[in-house]
Length: 470
Image (tube, rainbow, N blue to C red; front, top):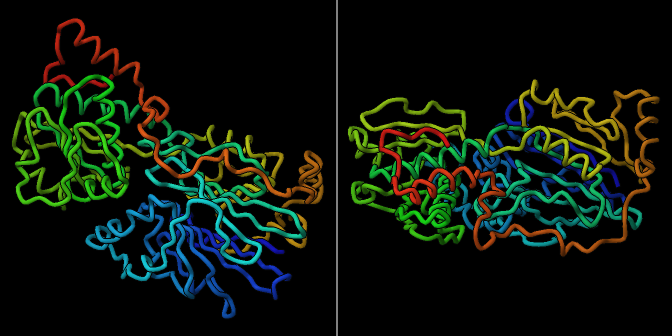
């Protein structure tokens, strides 16, 4: 067996990878497997004349991970995704094509295969999803390849967090078998929990003060925020009605969410009917310049008693002023650098392939992990990770450096592998009955102190003009 990887779009997001598994034992077939299909992925240029696309694995339903999927799909390859992602992908594509050139997605939906457990997709190759946090339904994928009777594992995280989100668990850090290759998205963000807490606090305070609150967000972020907000209100005994509109409502329904006081309205004719004093309405996109958000914003834009809360991803400029009160929060759900460090330490892989970041941000990982081989997502060269029963070293390392790394752990000599483990302890990509808000980054103690203490003291909520962060 020969295993290699190639970054599929290094000049764009560097979140898409082509892995090749060449197995001489099955007639010299090479399984070419694409993980995510973001902007700039060109499978025709990546594959040789005698190569075929074996499978595509989609980690989650964010545009930068599926933007070219309709163009790259070929050769009858199946598209694997977690079941929650698969169930919402039709609505994701339908909405995406209104604003972006995502192509005809019928073939993708026909090829879509929801994945819950291990699935064999080529000789001596099988894969299973693991929860990845980051977004509802997001998954990483563990690929097991068998060579010489030994099981070896590659974990492709996609965008991930160790914390869960809106009831979906985060990425597991322990597995019943060795993770030999960790392909990790190295995008990092600090302060997510604090920002989420502040956005929830402002939304609740304004609603309890009698304001009509419009929260604008991308579809998945809006569905997650609405679900989290409703459960926060339940926890704080706050009676705030929540309405989800348009695409946010569709994804909420696709994810089979059900939360107290939430009404999902996928289609509406009367925007004013969805807005009420003391209530919260969530719609997309994140900036209210089009779609459901635009129609709703038109209703409150000149209303001094109304509120606009924008949850932005950092790539767009929010509305800064209007007749209503305006807030914006940059809510980007990635791990901190220390979380990536801890993941590498916990898994102790032989190879660490780091991608999905600017060149400068990825440079921080160069030589960062002394007991393994670190590869950065630079260029489109194919890099060999495993060949003929042995894990290979990066060609730019001198022999003394390679020997020093191999000497730190006997497993680096190619003696890893196992006969199989019990994967029953590894969680599936399934939503829990209710979100653990504290574990998802919400500072519940601060919110309890602010809102519960206010009620207990008989002072009521803060005035409508006071929305300072907790």
